Image 1 (tube, helix red, strand yellow):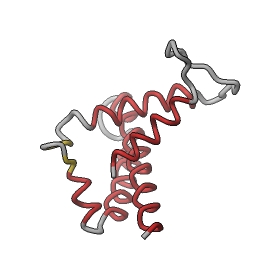
Image 2 (image 1 turned 60 degrees about the vertical axis):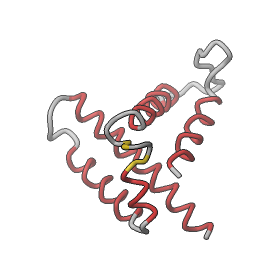
Image 3 (image 1 turned 135 degrees about the vertical axis):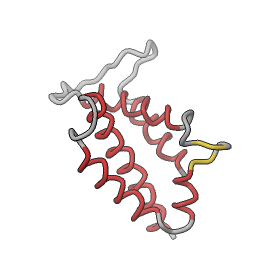
Image 4 (image 1 turned 30 degrees about the vertical axis):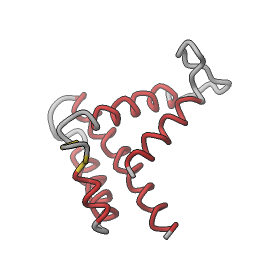
Length: 117
């Protein structure tokens, strides 16, 4: 299920990459969306290698499978949004925003999965 999020991010990033991995786009982004999407994908990829993933399963998968995914994701979105700028360095605040977006992606995945059943 979380592999779908990774697949979506890879698909989005392919739109921005040429064969030599340089960012190419006919759109002149005003808010660095292409760079931020690339960074977001790198951040999400790291969560699969870190302590979030035990024995190749993330605890989020168990929560989603037990039917509590929406509340869990929305709760974490609220948690990290409210914490933004109140803990640690500016880089820590930035990571909180990446977490908000990541939980948003997982929530979208859960929403779409529930709509399909």
